[in-house]
Image (tube, rainbow, N blue to C red; front, top):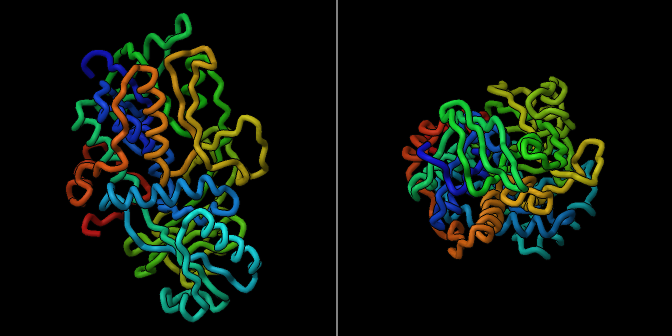
Amino acid sequence: MNGSPTVLVVGGGATGTGAARDLANRGVDVALVDRGGLGSGTSGRSHGLLHSGARYAESDPVGAEECIEENRVLREIAGACVRDTGGLFVELAADDPTYFDAKRAACEDVGIPTTVLDADEARERVPGLSADVERAMAVPDGVVYPSRLVAANAAAVEAAGGSVHPHAPLDALAVEDGRVVAADLGGRVDATVEPEFVVNATGAWAGDVAAMAGVDVAMAPSRGAMLAVDHGDLGPVLNRCRDPDDGDIVLPHGDEVVLGTTSVPVDDPDEYEHADWELDRCIEECAAMLPAVADADVTRTWWGVRPLYAPDEADSDRRGISRGFFALDHADDGVANLATIVGGKLTTYRRMAEATADMVADRLGVDEPSMTASVPLPGADDPDRLDAFVDRYDARNPADANLDPAR
């Protein structure tokens, strides 16, 4: 890193790289740092669902509308970082049919297109579906390859004149007279910089970074287990049409499917149990929709930690905590040049990044608007180039470790 950047973005997941891209494209001098390879936190340890918004339509219509809008944006700008698979919400005999009807009505209210399929039509789309299927609802879900997405955003930062530094942990922040005046960076940077503004985009670790500046950010992280099993040609994403619970998502992923997930509160996003019961639970529940996964070979397992923000909420398994995002301006907490972005979903990362960049640009007196919704990511239509970016930024992570560049 040469000199001190105008803005230091801490956290190299989707939101951090997205915020750095947005600011760099507005002409702001940006440096992005992460303690590991890019995407090594929540982004690269997700299940990789490109949400249509249907999952949240009845419980969080605002969030659902954000999802369908960003789903469409990513299909336009992200190219081979995403895959258009479609999705099915599957009602089994044991499920409440009124839930299905309520979800469909809620999708219609927020503009998420749906098509109802009877059991035979659903099994035509997915021949291995359970005999217990009553009906299904087709929605525009898809799959995200977070390694490519994060790396492409990072490449855009550098193309716009910013700098990107994986394996450069933030060790300390110095605050004087209500402002961050210095940031100590370790690892490959090993320097102290004096940015005009700091963006904390560290996800589940946001509370730890904020604490370096004497600010309280109340995170309530929860872990989720995922596993991949051998199973080709699934076609659409499968979602169990019931209240969100363990093991209710199956995603196609090359010659595998990804089964997930669980929700278990954790105190420390770095140190938590990897419990076999979670994997067993995911297999059992997902097999209720797709029986073949019960006997399929498990190829890999991983856990991720959700960056849930809950200053006023105590939820037993944290499923009830909002999946919306929060751009926190810490001027209200006595630190005028620090912002934190928390919560949200991988699908809405670009909107989260734009909201953060808008806040920072306003503070810096930058009038240039965001262009990230209309400008394609570098390499979007070239899988080989995207995978070269992944290698450049050490962004290969569990969510798409099996990714074949030809797919």
